[in-house]
Length: 190
Ligand code: NI
Image (cartoon, rainbow, N blue to C red; front, top):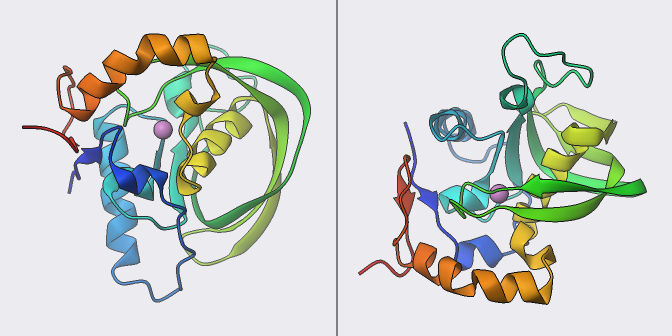
């Protein structure tokens, strides 16, 4: 089932997500719905707050970065994972800039600097515990989604000047005054 994606301005996007228990009600169904919602919106990641739940769950599938026939040096085509109760325990390496976007903030992009390497501990959808190191674009998408479960949005990192330029646009998004090809829920829609 495709769920509405919560738009910028909704307080749920600013909540710190809570860890969940293994017996969280209908977790499999929630994960399946989130995949469907993410693919429908052509996203490479989706975090639970974006569908209105302030819990520490997000999904990543970076295959959308690789065009047909293109080289895939980073192995992005087959990178598809569920992260539950994730904790980034190290973040280091050179910062690099990447132009980020977010399904909750349609039509807005911005250059964000982040460290290139992370070590993350999490549980997968089978409740197996993992501790893994990621770099490059995989790390980048994980960092962006991980921020969502801490109530942080990529626009928070933009320069004061750029934030100021975006103010009106972000207000319009909150009110639903934006063209978007997927189902959304706008906090201040009339
Ligand atoms: Ni996002």
